Amino acid sequence: VGELNNQVTREKRDHDLLVEGKKRYVGELSKQVELLEKHVATYEVWATFEAAEKIYRIVHSLKGSAPIFGFTRLGASAEQLVQLFEWTQAERGQDTVVPALSVETCKSLVSQIRMEHLIGQKEIELDERKEREHQAPLLRKQFRLLFIDDDDVLRSFLVRRLQLDGYQVDDVPDVSSAKKKLHEKVYDLVILDLMMQPESGYVLFDFLQEDPTLKWIPLVVLSGRESVQDKVKCYHLGADQYITKPFHYEELEASIYRLLMRTKHFEEMAFLDPLTGVFNRRYFDHQLQLEIQRSERASSRLSIAFIDIDRFKRINDTYGHHVGDLVLQGLSHVLQKHLRSTDLLARYGGEEFVIAFPDTSAEQAAEILNTILRHIRQAPVVQYEGQYYRITFSAGIAEWDRSQTADEWIQRADSAMYTAKQQGRNQVCAAAGMLFRQEAHESANHQRTATKRVLLADDDTMIRSIIKAKLDHLNLQFLEAADGEQALNILTNEPVDLCILDGIMPIMDGFELLSTIRKSDKWADLKVLMLSGKKQEADVVRGLTLGANEYMSKPFSIVELEMSVKRLLGM
Ligand code: GH3
Ligand code: MG
Ligand code: MG
Image 1 (tube, rainbow, N blue to C red):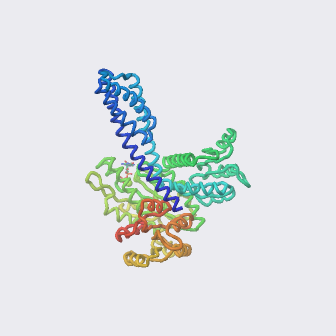
Image 2 (cartoon, rainbow, N blue to C red):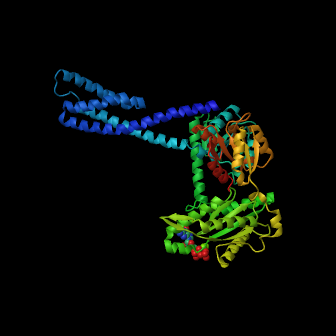
Image 3 (cartoon, rainbow, N blue to C red):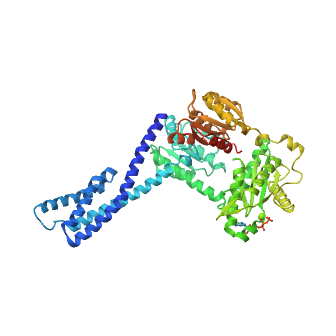
């Protein structure tokens, strides 16, 4: 794998150099082509040696340079012109005054050169676009794919290639394991082989169609059959793309990428609020049902907060609608910053936001909202044209209990918010009869306030003790491992919030451990900070691609480390 990565890096460097050179060359070429056309126009009128020589000088240099950057046809046109001129040059030696050069031939060759130049420009634009997209393993990283094929060799090849491009990929050899996977995890796209044993890929079509949450999952079919009937059948059954084996990896990847981006785009259009970028009410209502089901199953607590900005109309009236919009964006940002990744924030209406807090009691939710409120009383949510804008909000909290419907529940949070308004705004209120019950106090889920646990996986004892000493004041609980295997052992048996992971360690190195961790859902919430002696860009990209939340190289700054640790732990 290391070798493969190295090779990829080397090839990429060569490729980058070529692209860079080509880009400069095409820039230079625009000037040359312009000059060339000017000289040809002059030559057409005056037919002098001076004009002819100017043309000659340019085409001679084009002839030599164009092929270096892959413009062979341009080079060929230039060469033809050079030959015409060399003939006229010879004539000059014999004192011929006017070069015997056909203006028509000259013009047609120059216009060919111009066309080739335009094509070159276009190619570079396309290359750059592709490059930008390709350099985005982090963009691809957000997607999880499921690949179903009974051919072991093909499976391991394709999985490896897709992972190198940044995707998260799971693979299974048959339909029944695919069904299991699809129930366990959320996938963004399925790649399905049609001809499989014991059940054919067709069996999975029905399975996907019958499940409303899977019905629209992007589906790419790989098939050995090229018949039109097969293709038509697949599209009717729900395939989005039909690719025949043997396939070109690039083609497959490009169509996967396109499908994913399109789906993502439409999901964003449907579920995100365009002004603030947080979820909209439609998504919230839908997701809340799932959260309710989840909390019922796990008998965990679930709370919501209803938030309304105080005297927002005044902001609009005094400073204009634009500032009002900025305030909405600023508040969304502050709210999001204070929440966990599992909390669900949505803009519910004009200046109203809702948050669902899984695994959280009303009391804890109120505490979080109070913290945010204290924060925004001091720190302005918007700075615009040198002005600072502060706001406050009123919030109502309600915890889920099964004696009510979801609508009634939201209604209760809303009236608690209304109570907060009536009591003078700028405060958080819990729904009547809910908050601070003694029992709520005792059984409260302690996750939010518990001491954070940090695993230091590094074979260097010095580094471990430095980190422990320097981060002592953060009140963390440290666990230590001197190699990857030990670290994995600890992770398997004990809860850990953050792993500070050395890249190079004995037995199992940090990269390998990281990829193991990220292959399992068990550690979905685990934050990983890679602290590695490897500081090549490729290593950083590799660490991040494998799923590190952050990558720092040694020697590191303690201040920076502390900031990252705090950020990753949401402190
Ligand atoms: P209260 O403290 O009682 O909540 O007073 P308020 O002024 O915040 O409440 P009110 O409901 O009277 O006013 C809400 C204002 O929010 C009215 C509306 O113009 C403004 N608003 C709603 N959506 C947007 C938006 O997208 N952008 C901006 N700039 N203003 C909005
Ligand atoms: Mg308001
Ligand atoms: Mg309102």
